[in-house]
Amino acid sequence: MTLQELDRAYVLPTYARNYVHFVRGENSMLYDAEGNDYVDFGSGIAVCSVGHGNPRLAAAICDQAKKLIHTSNLYLIEPQALLARRLAELTGMDVQTFFANSGAEANEGAIKIARRYGTDDEGNVKRYKIITLEHSFHGRTITALKATGQEAMHTYFGPFPDGFVYAKNIAHVYDLIDDHTVAVMIELVQGEGGVQPMEKEEVQQLAAELKRRDILLIVDEVQTGIYRTGEVLASNLYEIVPDIVTLAKGLGGGVPIGAIMTTHKNILKAGDHGSTFGGNFLSTRAALEVLDILEERKNSGELDHMLLLFEERLKSYVTKYPHLFEKEVGIGLMRGLRVKEGRDAADIIKAAFKQRLVVLKAGKNTVRFLPVLTLTKEEMELGFERFETALGTL
Ligand SMILES: *Cc1c(COP(=O)(O)O)cnc(C)c1O
Image (cartoon, rainbow, N blue to C red; front, top):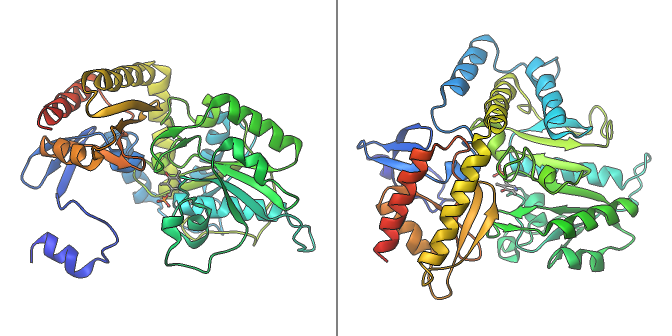
């Protein structure tokens, strides 16, 4: 059996896979089984924040694996405590953190915290409603899926938990607030929804109004977090302090980890929530190394330099290929080219792949760029050279 046949026969087909077989990588470069090189402007959907095959991350993982990978949360875990402190210090937030294993799971935990906030100590539910946005994406578990404001994703899996309502946009959130509202959950840049940034002033006003009304603000930073937008959190860039921030994708550099940071310390007690794997030695040690690497890159000015160059190039394509692109969207190294009406982003992505450049699709007909945060100028040039060759074939 070929690998493709094996995959088709034995793996549940939940993904529209491209059957390329990557076998190794080096920062932004991927290599397939035939030895072809690809420039990766997708970084495993914003996960490989420190690039592929990063020697520092690999060394930290190997070192930790030889000592302890897992003991369970029944005992002290030094890198978990260090990571929780590091996240508080880097983000400037006065928070405690719970560690999970994925974005959906982090959002589930955030929703549980909000529900706990709306319930009194005797277990009487006072407030439970959570407002989320249309075109949002919060994950694939039943509750995170219900929180996701895309009706098309709710077709088969009901009945869903109650208490989620969807606002068309931030201005519409106010109309949906009632006596039962306990939280509002948003992404500051909608990733899957088309790389759509929220307006800073609108977000700041919302944050202030929610605080005034004692309604929690949950910011899903699963994709925007960990320097993706240029700051450690998009919340830092927007200059807001949410009640709850969720993280996952870029935090472990590819090692599965999720996190829920909350300013409401001690809101959950022993037994209220938990995870067997969450925050184990391996994932938290990996995340500590990822943060070291990225903080250095931020402090050296390289990250800011590269994201400006990247943005400039994408903007130039809107001018240069007006028949293909309508506008450039996004923040930092989370960017997109919105494709002209009548054109299909999928065709552009296919053409790019033929030139051995990996780019992604996002809702609203957008070609999405999520390069590794350790991207070099040479890699960027090579990637865009291939992109222009691809555009020339369309
Ligand atoms: C990817 C993503 C999720 C889901 O994360 P998983 O790790 O796939 O569960 C949730 N929210 C946002 C904003 C995401 O981009």
